[in-house]
Length: 352
Image (cartoon, rainbow, N blue to C red):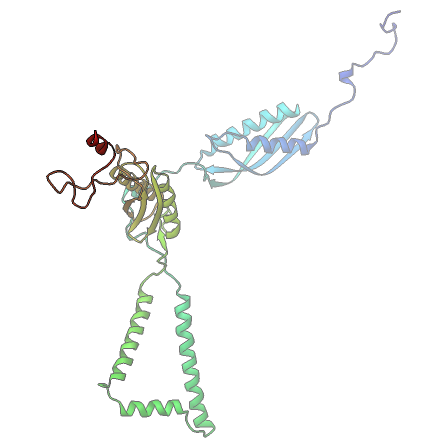
């Protein structure tokens, strides 16, 4: 008995042809969106915002909305996205792409792409464009406003109580008027009070005309964004310089103080050549300050002092206690008057 079907019997269907495979529109849409997002646009990628897919039997129509990176040639970029879209959908779903539509919604700048430096970037920084931000001066302004309000409120209360309630004026006001009537401009107390008022006014004027925020350093302006400013804390800059200086061989106990125009670096030298280490510290500090991107270049000032156990290179180390110096001879026989002659072998030789 063989496995061939009988003549005239019903023909059997091959296993591969039994049933059918239905690809959902949702799956086709996901494939289309992923394929469009994977398109290589000269090292950049398109951003898919929306996608649709319609399946008709073994054929499908797909459409995606994308945001292309700026700058980009729209026709060329759209052709690449459409080609990638059609190939991947046909390969993964097994359907025939009848129409592939790519709609460009907008162009967005690619922040990952390198930007061309502007023409003014090569100019040395530190000009008028990079300034320290102005401090709001909240504490001094609040103190002045509080004192002024309290004084005006007390004076207003006294005046209203005198004119409306027929009360006697406050003793402080009458005393002040009497004191001013009996003391002239040449009185020492009046001169001292005027000097204090002048100093207070000069201080307020200085606060109004200076930017403040002495604890920060302005950074170089952002290329193409002159309205944006950034600052770096002076303590953070000093910490970075200190960490870089501590890596120099032989340097210990590093202290850094960062000012507005220079950086003072003080360190101790445990071993090594002192002039070479000072040059290395100055070079390291200068390189670290250059990488910070400050608007004004700070000048490093290095003070290097050797530790008590430091010795110049090439000098043999001393071990144990230092030798006791021998006193010079004072007489013709080479012995001091107050020193007794050595006994022992000499005495035995004389006896013999």
